[in-house]
Amino acid sequence: MTRQLIILAASLAFVPSLAAQTWTVDDPVLQRIWEVGMEESRTPEIAQVLMDSLGPRLTGTPGLEAANDWSVDLIRSWGVDAEKQQYGTWIGWERGITHVDLIEPRVRTLEATLLAWSAGTSGPVEGPVVIVPDYQTSEELDAWIPTTRGKFVAIAFPQPTCRPDEHYEEYGTERALIRLNASRDSALGAFGLRVPSPPLLRIRLEEAGALGVLESNWSNAIGVNKIFSTNTGMIPTIDLSCEDYGLVWRLAENDQGPVLRVDAQGRFLGEVPVYNTIATIRGSELPDEYVMLSAHFDSWDGASGATDNGTGSTVMLEALRILSEAYASPRRTVILGLWGGEEQGLNGSRRFVADNPEIVENLQALFNQDVGTGRVNTISGQGLIGTGPALADYLSKIPPEITRHIELDLPGLPSAGGTDHAAFVCAGAPGINLSSVSWNYGTDTWHTNRDTYDKVVFEEIRNNAVLTAMLVYLASEDPDRLSRERRVMSQGPDGQLEWPTCSPGRASP
Ligand SMILES: [Zn+2]
Image (cartoon, rainbow, N blue to C red; front, top):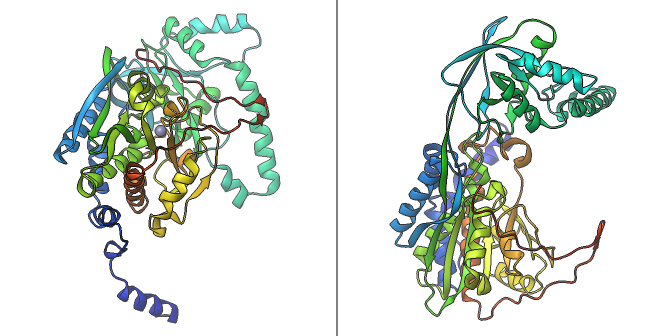
């Protein structure tokens, strides 16, 4: 054993378990929040059911409604009132299996996912693959469209490499990276002219009797694709991994006769009701003033919606559980909103704002989280001057183990969109977003086929739940209402910046 290892082993022997870490303060509620959140954290159990058993929560699917029902039952088991509140309707759809095999010129099972709100196949279907041609005139394209009948058609850009750029930066020569970027940029530009509008081309192929549309939305990491929705209501639109899409494309481009067998199931369910989960702990002294916990509950469905936004939902549920134990009789009313329809335009939270003006008017503060699994590291004042001193005061009372990573961005700028706090900020209410370190969120998990339970870092979200519970407690106890005075809006690159205006959100598709 080296000397270093001996020292490490010796020091480990004297480190008590992290959960036993103690932190004392005069305030017994903060002390209790710390104990309940740090020593009795339920984040792994909450996240495991949500992400593994319930799974993805696309708006309008039975998966999201099942999660709404589960969340209501879970919150009630903590002795807190909860209900699912319908805010509108959406296109009902249910995902089944996606199974795609290359069967000619050789056999390989491909990594494939039906895009959301796509038609499926009725049972397994076999057919050859063709690629969108490099046509010169629109007449050439018009003549090609009918030839796609009975075929699968690849219409996405074939990546020249499925290695992320970092590989070229780390292992390649400078010249190789320059050449890759130059050739990819010009190929992408040319491909943009070839398929100027994928939605339009899909519809033309569907009408021509193509068997299905093949696409690939690579996320610049090995094996990672983004999985969104499509507009084919009669034939499937299927995302293939970067690697498998490239294989099929090259086989077709080189006349090597690729044939696929596709069994993709997706079922439309008509227009269905959609819900927010709303939980309430009534205030004991100021029941008509509110502090809110906020996260969107819906997700895309290429994986489990783990970091978008299973983690934010878990943080808010756990914060509510902690409060129900440590602060069961809050001064102001505490409301949790787990929103539906965020991915389609913040619809659940925007409808809540439109339907509950008295809550928005009397909102002391709202704390929202929706940027993955990382520890909170930036909090913006959202352009509201009064939030700065209040947030600084609250953070000064919270243990530095949690707050030392946090920077305040004051007065900050009001968010116009992005996630649900923006639905409140546009109304001038203090909608605070808890931004966090990325853990490669944008590339690896955000809207991808790899957004799964294993990517959650529980050390981080446990801290975030304790932080959020403490912020809610301190905002609820604050003797003063937060001022809503707005900052002076400055000149942006495109002219004078304006305070964002509220959209009512879409109550139907
Ligand atoms: Zn999100």
